[in-house]
Image 1 (cartoon, one colour):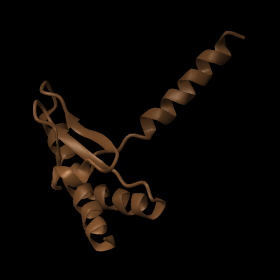
Image 2 (cartoon, rainbow, N blue to C red):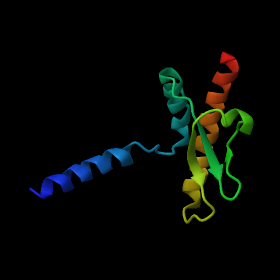
Image 3 (cartoon, one colour):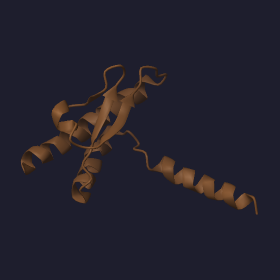
Length: 103
């Protein structure tokens, strides 16, 4: 019976990991459109010492939930970090255009 809690934890961890973006920049606009339809507006932030919302004014981004794309000053996977920042840029630009159009 001790296996059941371990199995449940493994399944839960799998779903949590699967929920993360793939960081493929080609999917960023699709995710933004899904978030707009569902009403879950957010902005991705990236950077190391100076974390910022990529591609949008900081005063606008501060009004919405923050999600991290590339945060931290130490990385071993530079191509991944570049994809994360590009993803954040494309996603944020789509959300920002929606906000400007809406207001």
